[in-house]
Length: 196
Image (tube, rainbow, N blue to C red; front, side):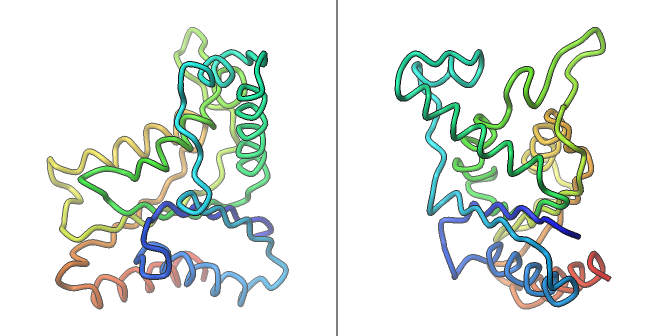
């Protein structure tokens, strides 16, 4: 393991369960591979702007006529470069109102770029990013995995697969509102299993 990209999306900083699990993952990774390089991107501390009528043509078609469009393309290029350089991706995804944080949706909008991270051919969409492993900590106060209410998991896998990231391990850390200690212990064991 040489390069790890960390994506944090929680609004709760150090109090976030997903951030705490990411911190565990990083600490255990560094203990096993001291030379590992970590790129730690906090989408709450440094949010990706929402697309608008000016920046959408920049991301979708490379239009670079205004300063805002130049900035949008530059940010998108930076985010995509991080993805391309990663050997592993570690993602924190708390469930807010039954879906992923808005910060993650904005991030996706900037990295899903036609002819850069995906293309269409006669077989449909083809992802262009390297298919590296993604470990996503999906945290929630309730329990949703495997139920009809878990629409988030399928969307996360679909959108990551769309850009070529098909090796996604969703680590559900649920019931945090009433059995946090048990849920965190189970997730910690999963981290140990991944890194053994």
